[in-house]
Every structure is written in structure tokens, then in C-alpha cells.
Length: 75
Image (cartoon, rainbow, N blue to C red):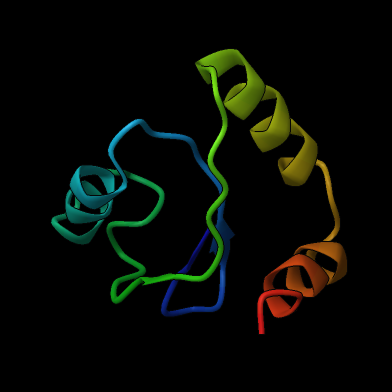
């Protein structure tokens, strides 16, 4: 999960986090290109792309408060 400059929380999946963050920072993603700088605030690893996609869908369905609790659980 990435926190954008306007505090928007973007959730997505990738097999290469460094590459994907670079793409976002360089404006390759329509949703985040005008919200730079970005900060990686939460990361999970899954065994399969299907598991990751299911988890992404679950998190995207949450209200912001629940996402913030997930992020703060790391600290």
C-alpha cells in the first residue's frame, strides 16, 4: 500500500515492488502520477498471484480507518 502526497492510499499487487514503485514515481500509473511523492506504507507477500489478488480485493473493500489500523499495526 502506498500513501500519496494527498494522503490517498493506493493498494495494488506486483511481483517486483522496486520496479512498480519506480513506475508509480515516474508517472506510469494514471491514478498516482499527479500525487507524487509516494511512500510505501504497507507490504505483504503471498505465494501466488491469485492469493495476492484476493487480498488486494479485500483491502480495497475496507474503509480508510481499517486500512490505517493495518498500517499502524506495523509500528
